[in-house]
Image 1 (tube, helix red, strand yellow):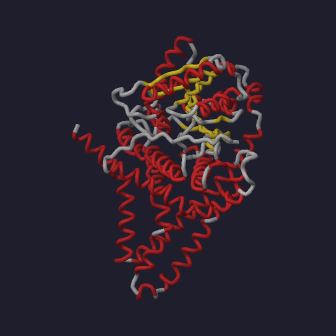
Image 2 (spheres, rainbow, N blue to C red; image 1 turned 45 degrees about the horizontal axis):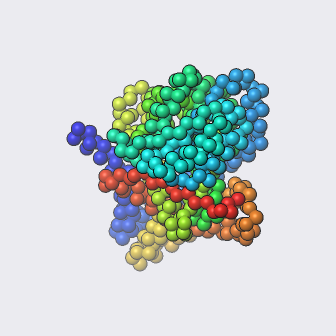
Image 3 (tube, rainbow, N blue to C red; image 1 turned 30 degrees about the vertical axis):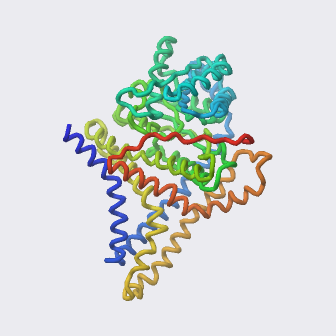
Length: 498
């Protein structure tokens, strides 16, 4: 056991160690060997520029597919192409904690408004015993309003303090999954004919989402060997959100859209779907982790010896933008959300240890999976600080001899050129963001469009304080063995929400 613990702790240290070595060397060598650091910064900025250019290219492809998908009548195509489409059921998990009834009802209303028969839905409202009084009241209102609206409506309450788990979304839906398995067994429904969607409680599915999902599932040669990832929009409350929240929302959406174009490196994120067969085969979601949304893909990947993938869906689901009762609360909630997402670094030890025990997956696949994971976490934590903060340090502290060199004289010019070229990405996503905005609502001034435009000037600030620092925080906590618990993002909606 001591040997296993040592291996686990060593692996937990590696991601943060790479980050802190980068910062320590960049600062220390700026004083000792500034020329070395100048070369490093130039190479790093060049690498980042190439990433931005790739980002723009992939985003253009994703955007075209997204717009085309929105124009397609998936429900009509499904019925015309697959006569047996009604054999498939949609199982929708809606885990909640203390969210207002307004949010729960808007999600259920969106399900009812889907271009898909309501009698093909099994909806699971999954609450927590630690909020029993609050949840029981919400559950009763849901039963009264929606009890006869779907094929089945199941309400579960996750008991507190069960062994081998942490208070988190994964533990909640693990418990709910076992409960609904009994229901499906009693109903005699084929696991292969049940498509599972795991939604946050504020998820508003596009009216064609389930038709599109069913079409992708039925047309796949191996439907149970895939998860299905839609475009995730954080725009339910975008008009009432402040600039940092909006920047984080749009940045997350555009990042995911580029990942959809590259399914070979796509993992599940936030709200997504999969087969009930695969869910049962992997033993449901893990109960002792925070990042269950992406871990469930890795569970499938290893359960089927690498024969598991993510199928992109260019159809959106919408969720709330981060908010708070006050501006300061909103900023704190945004930081906590980003840190929780960055806690996906907990996958690294799991991947290494699970790969070492599986000889049926090719070394190439293993290496690629590890590289995507560690490179993503590393650049998430380091890139904004290296580019916007440390880039000028060696020039500022170098002695007069170095500062008079050709390299030192030309480095600021080169860095400025590279940075300006990289700003093309901001111009592209800033322009595209206007097309993702929901209706403005009569209570929102037209002047808000102006702030929507100029907010992108804050992107460097946002990347440092609400991307890089939360990632460093999460990785450092893992390195120090201070594991992060699951923090529920506060949901705040105004009474005049559009």
